[in-house]
Length: 87
Image (cartoon, rainbow, N blue to C red; front, side):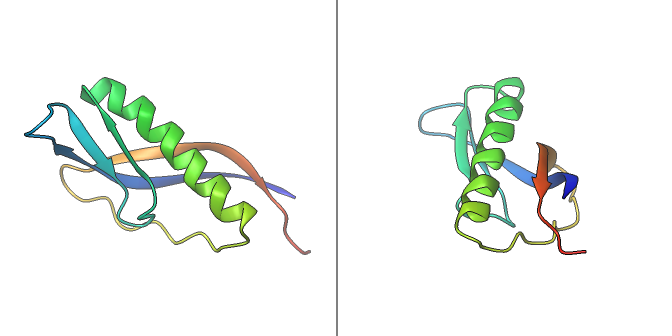
């Protein structure tokens, strides 16, 4: 088993209707959350990413290779996970 730290870019889109931000991950479309501020959004995004990755692993779905971080995006680190590897 291998401990792995994953990080994916997140997009914080201002929510003009309700305020705050809608947070999405281009590489993991099922990971969507919202927050009232950037600071809170970084925490919410970390939790959201961890849940989405855990869900993929439970369903035996592959994890995508993280895309390149673009200007204005935030790099969100998923808490370390243990991956079973054949070796």
